[in-house]
Structures are given as structure tokens and as C-alpha cells.
Image (cartoon, rainbow, N blue to C red; front, side):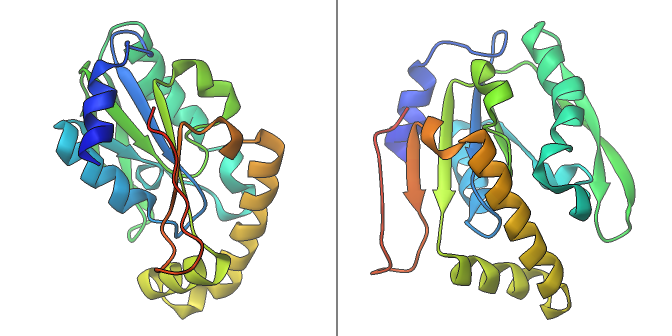
Length: 189
């Protein structure tokens, strides 16, 4: 990860004065953990899709407009962005989050490396794991009562990623499968 962080620091700005890095891939692939670790290495902020309300029944396509309007567009113009974090436990908006103009910003979540935002990205990282591994991870995190919802979400993700062809534009592909389950890699950005 250190070599990726070094490489990102050398990339030209992509979203106004900011090097925008997307960490994308299906639910349960480890995007949040990876993005937070990379943000720590880079000394930058990570904005997560889970900071926004993502309607189960609308799939990955719709939530991104809020990120674009409130964070990316201001940064593209050289101004700070910001949003109110969504609290999933309370089902309501929580505290405001400021996103300053900085050398690097990581955006993480399903659909962050979408085709419509590719021109704003300095680097796109794709994480993946087998469906059974991902389902086990999300159910351990969120509880078995959401299994049917997660299965529906997985289907919506597959359709979204197929239509958007997200994985093919990734600069780096990482498998987070347990050892021996088809590890992949790639060249950093």
C-alpha cells in the first residue's frame, strides 16, 4: 500500500487541485477498510458512500448525485465541499462534514469509480471477493436479518457494474478473498 500512496502523490490533480482516488467494488469486498488504511498512509480524508443515504430499492446509481453536487463539484472549482453525514442507525442526517481542498481525497463505495465521474479521478482502485465471502462479511457486520436485502443489493450491484463497466477502468484490481481463493493484483495508478 505504501507504493500506491507514493504513486498517488506523484499524479497530477484531477478534480480541480485535488487528486481524487476512488475505491470501488461490490459490497463486502473490503472497500471501507482499504480506503481508511490508504487515507491514513496518505494523510488525507476518506468520504464513504455510507455517509450518504443509499436507498436499498434504488441500487447504486442514485446516491452519487449528492456526493457530486456537495463535494466533487466544489472541489473541482477549487472550493471546499461538505455534506451532512447520514446516520444509518438513527435513520437521519447527523453532523456536517467539511471536505477541504487538499492534495488528495479518497471517495469510497459502490459506484464511486463510475463512468460519469472517470474524468475527475486520478486513480481508481477496484476491490473484489467471491459472493459467498462478501455475503458472510456483510451479514456479520449488519446481522442475518438483512440477508434478503443484501441478496437483492448484490443483484442490483451486478447489473450496475455490468452496465457501467466499472471494473475495466480500474487502475488497480485487488482481491480480498481468503488465501487460496483466486488472488488477483494489478499495476498501481
